[in-house]
Image (cartoon, rainbow, N blue to C red; front, side, top):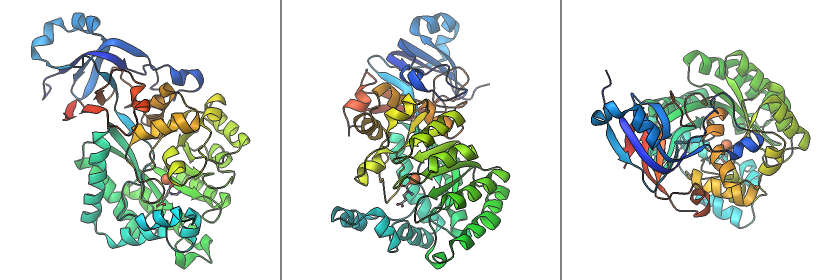
Length: 421
Ligand code: NIG
Ligand code: FE
């Protein structure tokens, strides 16, 4: 017996289904094919999508049950799958307006970090914050994500850099997953920066991450992914490989912050270790991109970070043309991308990285879901999947990328419940 009456969403002007993409991310021309149904309808029951089709088709299929359903009229509206953000540093305390101003005066992101600011500054604030404070600050960000149509979010640790505080961040993410309507997928990122006391012996910190932290994260079931900031001045490709390989032995799937500031063979490493995704890739090499295409590693691109750091964006066009599955994300964090707006990221994907509006939407739905191994659950509107949908004030999917800085999301449905009206 279902506890709630069925929902019958009817007459969407454009129903973006992305049907047929649950098994693998979309690549090449397939990223353009949104599988749109005009005058589309969806029957939702028990939190799941039961049927998707034209209104005429669903009316025939469910004519005997219309009386028990609650109808939602989507006439004149675009409807998409709930958006998925596959890369965030959601759980943190404080903000870094002071560094923003310093960068505007010419200081670089890495200079600020090397001088003890940047990630170190947020680490200090996050260590000082207790569980409750982190919960409150992070919940506020999640609420803002939801209002923009985001229904699944990946969240990394990495502002503790000590077991007690890494654990605290991951526990906050777990609690939010239980108590907030947004689904959260957790990533351990103990190797986000080398703490200052290990500055002259970074391998000792890597030892700590691989010998102590990773086994504990796995034992306590605190995360599903393991990430590392592979960048000159942070972790070398060799150290990164070690961290990701040990994570794999403990059942944590690899992800990597790669080739963000300088070319560093991060994309190549991602392919070699079989990473689920490689993220950033602003300076990825042609060989690295080719290797990722072959390995089936999803490229999670973060054009908001390039914009905010005043850097050249990743070359999404070249990656898609090379057969790499591309996803987009906010990178939501206080240093390099303090935003929760995936629609703005889609706009930047088009204007700064050569993506088409359709590709950008694929990259924030089904490909983003595959980047966090949730392609079977969310990211497209198909029978059996979680009923996560967004109804917009516009009727053409291209409006999402075109009219930027505007929140077009009107109604958000999460696991079959209307959570934003
Ligand atoms: O993905 N690049 C490393 N980590 C984050 C930034 C973290 C911070 O500056 O606080 C990123 O850009
Ligand atoms: Fe990041």
